[in-house]
Structure formats: C-alpha cells, structure tokens
Length: 309
Image 1 (cartoon, rainbow, N blue to C red):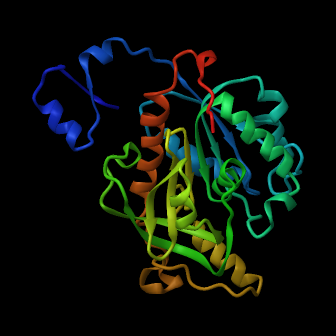
Image 2 (cartoon, rainbow, N blue to C red):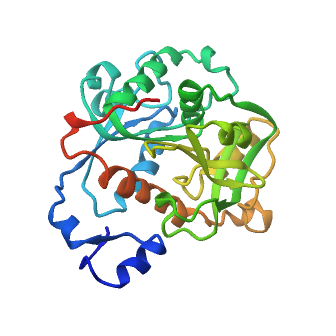
C-alpha cells in the first residue's frame, strides 16, 4: 500500500524521482475502495497446484481480492478431479456478461503445437477478444503470454534448439516502470519452455514495450504501451520444488533432460534446490495488482474503457 503524505511535503518530489509510490492527502481523500474482481483462467493440467501457486502470490498484499476461476469448456481436463472443477470453476458462457478489474491466464504444455492446432484455440480467441472490453488489466504467463501476443499482435513463437530450463538472471530495462518498483537492477526467475518470443519482434511492434530480459533466457516481461496487457514468459510463482519435480519426472520416463540451470545447490540434485527468485516473483504480482489494477481501474466496472488495439 502507498504511504500517505501532505501534498506539499518536500520529500514527495524525491520519492517520486526514485519511483516510490506516495499518495497525497488530496488523492487519498477522494479514493473509493472496494474489493478487486480477478478472473483466473487456469490452463495447466494440474490445476490445483497452479492455482495454489498463483493465489499465494495474490494473497501477500493488504488489498481485498475476489477471485473467480475459469476453465476451458472445449477441452476435458484429465489431471484435476471433476468434483473440484464443478465446485470451483466456471465456463466462459457463465462469466461472459461480467466485468473484471484483472485477468490472469496461465501457460500450458502445448507450446510445441501451432496455435491453430490446439483443440481449444477457437475458444481461447473468444476469451481474448472478450478481455478487450470486459477486463481492465490482463496478466498472461508463458504459453498464455505467447497466445495473447499472437492473437492480438500477430507475433509468432519459435521452437528452441534446447529447452530453456532453470533459474536465470534478468535485468530491468526501465527503472521508471511501476511493475518493477522495489526491484534490484538484476533479479532471478525460473523458466521452463521449448519455445520463445524473440526480443526483436517485441521491440519492433509499436504497441509493445520490453520491460525485462535475460542474456540466457531472452525476453522475460513485455507490456502494451497503454499498460493494460502484460506478458510474462517465466514463472515467478513457482514453488521451490517445481523444477525438481519436472526434472525427476522426465528422468523417470527415460527422457533426455539437462539439469535445470542455477537451481540445485552445486548442481547436485541430491542437495536440493536453492530458492533465489521468490521475493522478486512475489513483488511482480503485488506491483501488478497495486499499480495496474487497484490504482487505475474505474470504481464502477460498467465504465470500463475498452482497448482499441
């Protein structure tokens, strides 16, 4: 939450120059407050694990948030109990008349397929089109980010010669971006993917800006220039053992998989993982919720401005 200070306090200018959020008394006295409405499209097969990871990040904030869970109806989930889906998840037809402050779309392990060959691609496109008018701020992750970039801007994904797998060092490209308030110049984040969006494609699109990247892992965060859409290619929400579980799973299946980079202590799986990404991963979600949802969404969601792009 912001600190509240007198309008004319000299420290105000210093804090603003350092990109620290301080709310003036005038603004605070006129601010309406209500719970934020977030819709969460969970595309991952093991939905309970993913929803726990993301909800943990959303919960570490003083903001009051109402979360609704959305599933794809044109694809039958095989890894989540149907009782769980029936109890907690809705379909697009059930929510399409609603409006939301924010929406989160996860990744899913279909990235090697062309988008048009994914069995629920048509429904995915309908949801993305709906989000233009019914969602104020969109936060997409991994394949969800790739799908949104392709649908909205025609930006392709490319297969990699070698899977990006591990925890990689990134740098913030602009210290003035609210999404990176409180970040160090360099930070770590996990990646696990076989495809990429190339930085040159993102940089040449006039509707997008690249916010953070890695020499080893490439683009990490991009956003629309109006700060209404965010595309995150890594996984700041991952648990300590997520990459380990993936590594040992593939080993048990006899698949070739390299050690996740910068993950196991001394590159020794027997010594377990070292967690060096959690604080920045948490801060990414907190900043998105605060600066791009809570501080900017209209109090009355019926007044939600549609996106033109």
